[in-house]
Length: 373
Image 1 (cartoon, rainbow, N blue to C red):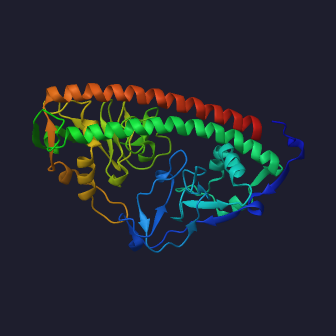
Image 2: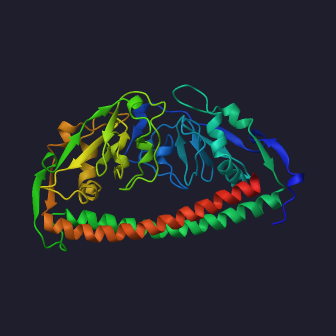
Image 3: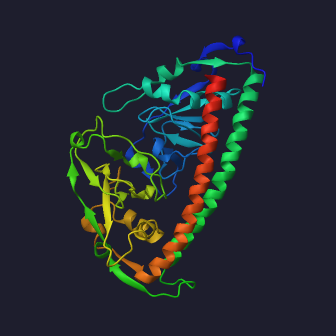
């Protein structure tokens, strides 16, 4: 590419794009029955490209249109996705809409994500205002150069999407197998299932710790857990945390008891602390193999039951006393071992695909800095 960066002018984002700040509608209009528009509130619904709808709103206040850039304006600030459908946006999100420059603007926002985090204001909830977004200075190349830059990053995105497609297919296969192995009516499973209460196969570890006593340890918040993933790929530190946290040990399962519909349950591969909005679950080895339990917890039968017993309307939460008495079908230990061998093979392939995706992400980051830095 032959870019004439010395000719690029600096303009305010609000001069080249329309900015729509989100606004939370009444909680009475929320639903999970797909009534109204998909409702997005923050990064928890974001993926690498398009958000995933887990809630809908029957009376939206602020609306984003397809192809709008969605950007988080409350902590964590600066994360972006693309609206792939008309949707309602809450106060944690803003929509950015430009007729000619949307693709380029998205590239630049990806480049300055860390800088946007520093612009966040507020003591408890860091955030950026509509004025900060509107006044944000961006370098604006001619349209022909914008298209060249966008085309380069779209080619990288396409490669990432191909890897993600393979990853998704493997995830779907894994989920089908998980569900089949706990299905009483399965035609493929030859072993018998045992009916057990969840409290018979697992225990809730409620050891608490003050963050000041956990300096240097790893912290896992609910934002660090990815939906439908049993591995943890990112984490934080206990610095500046408020309130007591839960102690977690290597091999324990961190289960998001709040908003269980997000399907967050992952294995800690370290000792550390985690959010008190999670449950720390530990397998009882005489009833269930430790490695098998997290897969079982990702079965539709477990997650559907978890959703059913959640209490509360805005942030439904599970109580251990309700979860421990739920009855499920579990294979015998020998069958669990055989099943786990299959799951581990699939996880190895998934890990390889994740490494490919990480390589492409790193390439994208280096090129963003080189071209737009």
